[in-house]
Amino acid sequence: MKKLMFVAVFGMALGFTSCGADDVVDFACDQFRDELRESVQADIDAYNADTSSTALCEAARDAIESYRSNECGDNAFDAVLNDLDCTSGN
Image 1: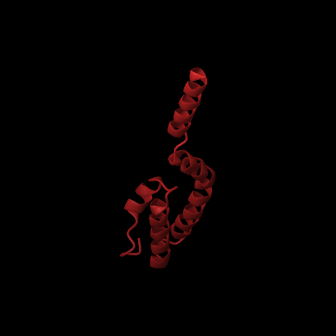
Image 2 (image 1 turned 180 degrees about the horizontal axis):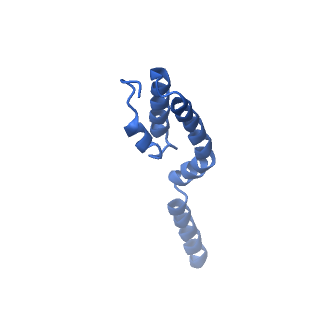
Image 3 (image 1 turned 90 degrees about the vertical axis):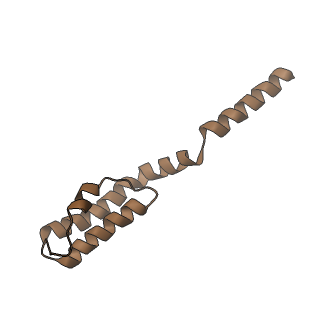
């Protein structure tokens, strides 16, 4: 009986430490990250097609900032964000 209890407690401890909430978020994010990136990239491409448009620049900037603030977002577009200058139209 002691062995059975040991195995049960060990199994529960292993389950609690290996299945954290971050594992669930990482899995969900892996599935949707490409879709999120495609949406942001579409806004960036629209701006790149017409770099004189302040509205397109602001839309691209807002899309990147929204992406970064999403729990599945990362810093993939930081270089683009740093290069955006929506005040001059370039």
